[in-house]
Length: 183
Image (cartoon, rainbow, N blue to C red):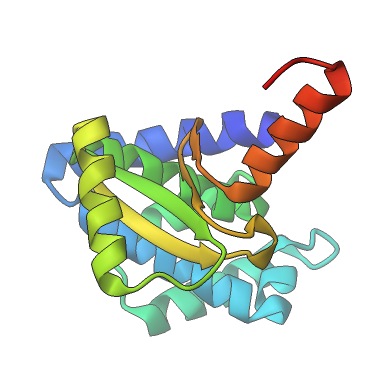
């Protein structure tokens, strides 16, 4: 829970700068790119976050990486601040929360749609349109497959879940039979 509070605080601070200078989307891409580098290069992530190494040595490594990435001055300062405050390990959470904040800023919702079989692009577009109408936001769909659903699909947007899977319907019928209710 503490990770979320830390991530929220740093993400909101960066967003306020992004709103002020109109670069919120740029910062989202830069932060996401830096986090991707850390996720791919586990040794680098470990070297930056491990307090067993001297802070000045870790800071030099960070500055070298930032120099190679050619990020904006604001992002360099932000990442240096996160490092100086000992929060580099929370960077992925900060990036995820920042993405949610910038999505809200531009009225975008992200949906995970899981189906038993792979959806055609036409089906994905129809689902995207339906979800957009329901939420009043532009919806970006991340399609996934899960054969255990048997058929139908499950759509998740934040805390909202639309479950139209055959698996859930069968489990509901099974539960009704267990309770002895009439169908």
